[in-house]
Length: 472
Image 1 (cartoon, rainbow, N blue to C red):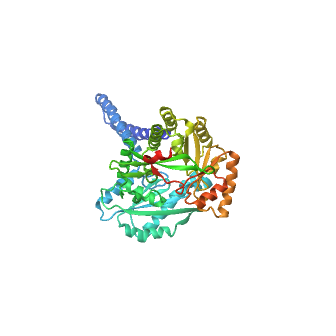
Image 2: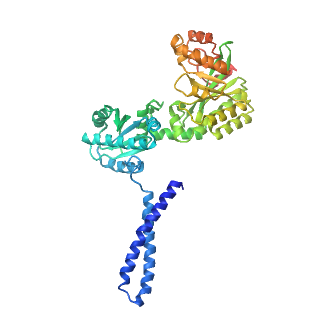
Image 3: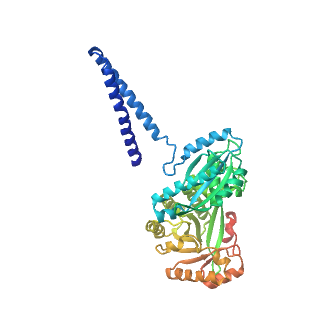
């Protein structure tokens, strides 16, 4: 039990005592006046029994209340569990029922500038203002629950079209508003529950992804829009260790020879349908299967390398979260040993879009791989990734530039930025790696810059591993 929970229980226990003792004393005094000596012993015994029963009952009620909170204490709206219960009951009775998700944005910035207390007050006041506006539009008695991290959900017994025609335009017209003196960004999306068989979590997930523009379920190859079906397919594929590998050559720009083979993976479900990991990584993350997925990919690649006798350098993409996890690190070392592959033959390409603040620890993790002989590459250098910040403190072996160095190879303004990055890489003895080399002109321009490694469709497409023998 966590410390705050212990303190809460202590407080409730004291409340129970304050409730029980005065009541018992009152009853004892009241009935004592009407009893003679012969009846006192019986009365005293009954009072002891009654006090135990009343005390237990009060304790039970108060402790049960500890687990049955209705309101989120920070935002003063329904907590997630209560909201789901109420909205589920309303859905059963309503002809139409829709969910409206609201995002109060930029909380990290508000927290950094104004502090935690002001952030909570801002969040509470912002949702109160929006709820009042919705009420003024004629949508009365609408339950609203806290989804977490600045996201709120409204349950409305109206069709999605009504909400999109009336509520959403009104809210988005106030997309940037002021709560007291703090600027707040607001975004929202709505979805209708077509029937009672649709899980609320699935609908909330779709709303969350719609607002954030991530993981478009409609893009899945089989056209499925059932979030739980996707979860099942992913679980089954990972459990069955069912995936397909592809490879692409990476050329040395000076020699024109293929020196690195980069592998990518797609999960395959029980009906032999591909599930590309770029599309379903959010599902893998939510299921807690990220470690299992990457270790599965590493093992499949190691097995292939050992079976085919591949002696070229091999490269695999791995998330920064998985890279930092001790189980993944030990698993990679174990697989290298089991398949008799030299660590120096492996490059781990690290992908990360948000800055990991514990850079000292991150550096220790990366250097543990490098000390073992494994090369590390940071990807998407030049985009919104935190690579440049990391390079102030962390030494790696390769940096993969983002695609803009290829897309804008003739733009002097863009290339001037890469001139500065090239200087950093040269001074740090970090090899540069360019992607999206789609034609001979791009290849020529990047080669003239001295970029050490080139990759793209002009030099070789991703192909199934069944054809890998032609390049080894």
